[in-house]
Image (cartoon, rainbow, N blue to C red; front, top):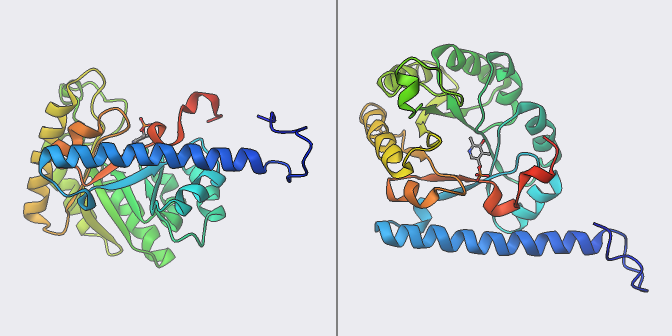
Length: 255
Ligand SMILES: *Cc1c(COP(=O)(O)O)cnc(C)c1O
């Protein structure tokens, strides 16, 4: 957009766009906080027990900076190629970086450099690679076991989004716990397409309880996105991962 030019005053180029973007994100964040507050009230939970992770994929570092100025402390990315340079550009903002996308073992080295939380640990081999890299980098990573809630995946059809069969969640948590430099911090899931999110998140919450029984500090339940966060909060989400409700439609962005 460049429609603010030619108004006859000497504002530096781009300033109008930046403040417009800031106001837009501010309004989105206010509306999002209202949704989270209402969902917490309905569930008898406290809003401070639900962390908003702003998923900034496809959006520029300038948006991350705006979010930080508006009080967001947690940001999420799903592709290392995009996340690594963005995290570097935003160093010094005091943000916690969450890696929420499917993760190839060969990207573990890069992700271990900037991520504070990895939501998508779904196999022992990945835990081992992250552990090795975290130790080499002198870093500590909180790791969530990603659960595949799609019954089709449990029937042997591979799910498109990653995640382990709920029956194998404890084995992955054990693999994380075995790695110095990693801590099992909870579970994560994406509601299967076309399924009832409340039913899916109720199943996730049961898996979360099993993991917590063995690892009492693994309290995180990462569930819920822009379209289904109310159902997630109703069923115990401690982290909601929100992109479009904060930053608008990604379809106009590259990536
Ligand atoms: C993109 C993404 C989100 C955010 O989704 P929205 O619908 O834009 O809120 C959440 N979780 C994961 C794993 C994602 O890749």
